[in-house]
Image (cartoon, rainbow over all chains, first blue to last red; front, side):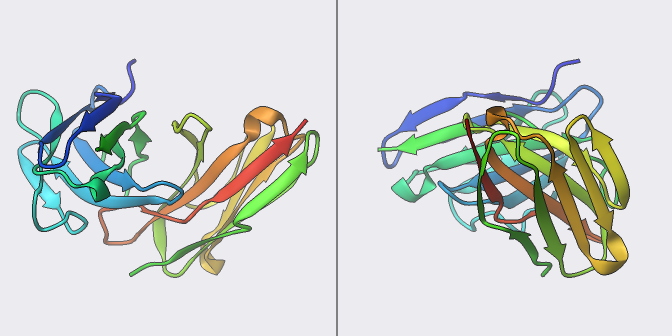
Length: 115
Length: 109
């Protein structure tokens, strides 16, 4: 049973370019979470999605960042016009249950470097 | 919002030693998880333990929800135990897991 799959594992972008990070949840999981980890820091919540719905985006920056989880295909975290401060590891997690229950399982992360 | 405090921030031990890592939280929770982030950055699930005690090999964890803390015990440490240990909680009514700042554990041979 495959775990949470993230790609790409490493991504290098120049300032002003777009970054797209993909996440396929574990089989049978319909809840996806995105977290960001800056160097030497803990993980910070960004957004929680279910299929075709954004449930909680309280941790998402107001500009340049967007997320989706379409009916078919992986969840996408999109960062437009990247800046050096966007350099971080972006982790996706999935669970089979949402509110109040459900163990989260994390992918191996996508490491974004902005030159 | 809920605060999650982990202690100690750093811990350096010799191989074979035992250790206790602590996680304090500030409100009622219905989910608490311990993770190990290895030196390659991978997050490994250790325990899902909103209450009670669990054991898995050399690792065990106890959460006392009424007193708002959890403890992770590592016995007979090995160099492969090195990394950062995170506690993460979800308080009742919320959607997200909130992470502590982690305990960086270094096991020297």
